[in-house]
Image (cartoon, rainbow, N blue to C red; front, side, top):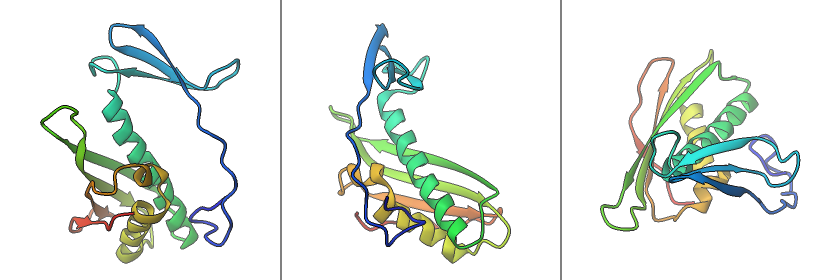
Length: 162
């Protein structure tokens, strides 16, 4: 498997991703792996009243995908993350479809010995090389990020396209 912890490894064959969405009424769905013992499910609400909307779920997937990479990369540098939170702001088109037109990820990272350059490089690597969710989005969508490291804010940067 190709990951930030083993960059020289060859990617393993990944099976297809299969999920089943079951309508539960109104504009709400339960989503999970099909079949007996399929695993965890998520509730998605297109009206965004009882759960995340489909677009909010997409933005959450981008956030969590990038965050896992950042944690792994910093651990490889022997500077493990003690706490991490991320806020993502996704801007949307004012026309139909109201697709994402830009996203800004604000990482709040805490950990002893983490160097700002390494933290920012970890985010950049995630968003330009490792994060499969980012790589699945339209490359023309600008993705910006900032890193607040141990309470010190940094400038917002724009990643290059994947």
